[in-house]
Image (cartoon, rainbow, N blue to C red; front, top):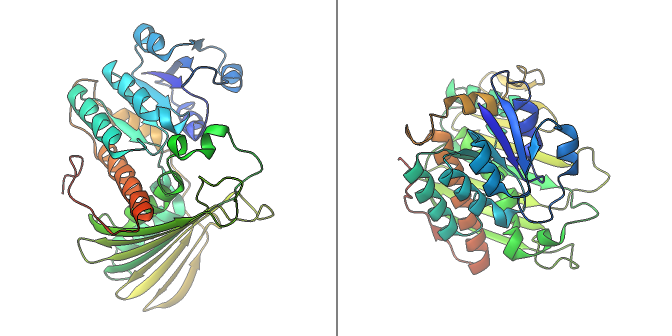
Length: 337
């Protein structure tokens, strides 16, 4: 299997750390996601890969099986379309698009070419979240009725210029809120039927196009309700960059899972317990990549469908916050149920 890289910004490092251990995969080439993108850290680390200044030329000459696309968010969709048209599967920074029309165009492209396109959303593989899901599936807290998710980040000291503009950033809900939506989807995959959201810039007036405070309210087809808070207000003095957490309320118990603290607390009929020891984290991307059928063949995988679903929900929640209107979520082409 041949892997190529497009871009040098975002979460691609996690993909490369896992795939570096695959003995049946070779990293063959690197190209920028946009003109002038700095690839030096990547080319220094992976000095055996051929470096191109044009991703189209790279795709044509190297014919990779899979490409990571992790660069400016406003470039992701067009690059993924180029990869698919070259018969290449892609693992992309999220969201997969910044507008609904672009997301639909990408979907039409990959389904026509029979290629996979997944977002870098490995949260469900986190040992704490995976353990919580196991307890839910075992019936430990009854039927899930209410979910509360949290995603909090430090804002940092500096930002690239494109990250400060809505047109190229896309909004905090699609960029960060998609993680909270992923937490929720990881433990309850009932289809979303409606959602509302609010967002604001309350602490960073020097960056007026970046929302630093967001809330989401969601209803699912099976009646489950969910909320999520998303913010850029984590103090710089805090341990760790992020704070990932989900509370799962069932008809006969409650689970609180903190991925950053590495603990899961459960209150059920047997009392109160705290779990801090979990199975070792298994790799997320290599098993997925090995399920990719030969390009041009096979069905679109569940993980590709989930990536489009979550990207769609993120964009819809941003739109709900922009318009201050509740969004009714209808079945989309990538939704099987």
